[in-house]
Image (cartoon, rainbow, N blue to C red; front, side, top):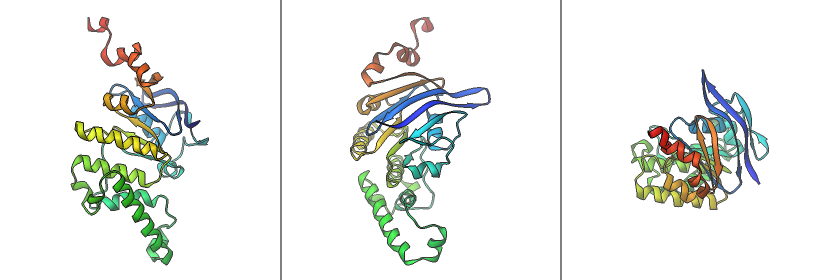
Length: 256
């Protein structure tokens, strides 16, 4: 059963067609990777799915509900969380407070209730704090809870950002190059962590350049080139796909 259905999705910037008539499905409980050369439209695709950009054409359905045209906070409210290619943490806030931002998306207290310190908001705050701590513990960063998030090592900042996304309790997690800047040991740990996230019932769509990680964790792979889909299949089939090999390595004629 598809949790996410994308049909004819497109987005242009001036004369550049960054995403061009892209269609694919994402089965619930699976891990799907999106790969392609630099400039293939991968991050633009994520921005369209998460509401950061509006599409020019096409539809995005999440569990049968339209996502295209919604704002990021509305997309998040449906149960879609994301991380970013470049870590985006809030400055002068602890790791725990950063993660609580994600947890607060599922809370009931609004600005006025928070300002008035209504009694029921105290209990909710404790619940959200506990959820944020659980998310930090899940990614192995509970010991960093009180640290200034932006003063942490890069790999630790990545972990905090991932915990913030998980604190939203998403059904679908969009990971934009989560292994960027990580060493081999950290990348192996990340792969195991993504597997545990899927085991918790979270469907994962990941953009990633590290092919060893992609081939190890993915159930399916979507390949983009110049904004268009050129292949979509299981990892072993993608490895043998002549068009994918040509896009990544170039043909013999091109080399000549």
